[in-house]
Image 1 (cartoon, rainbow, N blue to C red):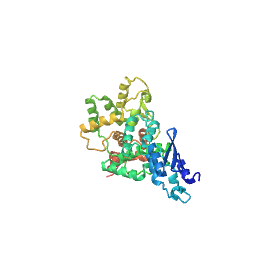
Image 2: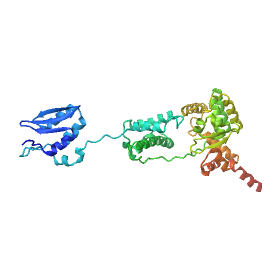
Image 3: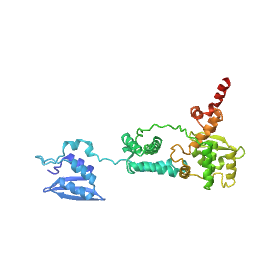
Image 4: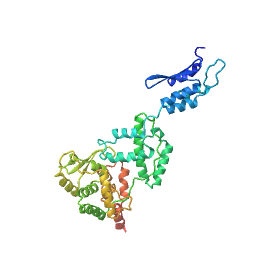
Length: 380
C-alpha cells in the first residue's frame, strides 16, 4: 500500500503544517518551520510529532496536539487512526486565538481620545488615577475578564480600605471609561453591569464668615496670593473648581465686570457678574496678563488639593470630611438663598439645570424663613 496513513490523520496534521507518511521500516514526518522544510523519521509516529513540536519550541501547540491526540492501534490494513472525538470536535482541530487587547491598550486609547490636554486641563492627574485602577486588575488583563463578579470584588476591596461610596464610584467611573474604549476597539462587545454605590451629593457643610476669613488670611500669611484670590472668587461667583481652573483671560469681560463660564458640567454657558471683592482681584491680576489664552488662575487639581490639605490641617479642619473645595460653591448658593434671591436668578448665577437643585439650598438655611417668623410675630 503506497500511503497507508488514514486521510483524517493528515487532514488534521496539515492544519499544523505537518505531513506524515508510512515508509517500509518507519514513519516520515515533514514539517515547515522558520522558512524551511524539515523531515523527521521515527518508527513511532507519536514520537515523531513530539520531536517536531519540541524543535519548534511551541509548548502551547505541543500540549494541544499531543495531549488531545489519540493514536489507536494499526488496523489490519496498517492504517493509522485518530480517536473519533479528536476528528469530529472542532475544539481540537482549531487553534484557540489569543484574547484581543489588554486593559493597558484600552487605557492608552482612552488617554489618546478623552484624557488629554485638549479635553481636560489636569489630564495628568486623571490618567494617573485611572492607571492605579487598572493596576489593580493587571495591565495585561483582557477587558473581557472584567466581569460583574470581579467588579463586585473590586468594590469590596475598596470598601475594606474605608473609602467612601463617592470615591468608589469615581474609581468605577474611570474603569468604565476604559471599558467603553475597549468596546470602540472591538475588544469586547459591551460594557458589563457596574455595581454603583449609593451616595448623596448634597453636602451640607458651608463656610461661615469667620471661617472664610481664616482661610483667606492663612493663604495671605503664607504669601500664597493665588490661593487667596481663588478662594474669594470661588465663594463670590459660586463657580465650580474646574470651571475656575479652565477660566482664561478671554473669558473676562472688563467692560461689564463679569466672567463668561464655558465648558461647564452640564454643557451650558453662563455669564456671572463679579462682586466688588472679585472685581478687585481680576483687575489686579489683569495687570500681569501676558496672553488672552492664559489661565486666570494657574492651578492644577493636584496643586489645589495639596494647598487645601495643608490649610485644612493647619486650621484644625482635617477631621471634617466635608471640608472640601467644592463647599465654596455651596457657600455661595446658600448665601444667595439667605439674601432671598429668587430661585430663577440663583439658577442663572450658579448654573443649575433644574429648580430642585437650587431649592435644596433654601432648606439648608434658617434665615431664609426669617421673614415668615417676622410675619407670625407681628400677628401675635
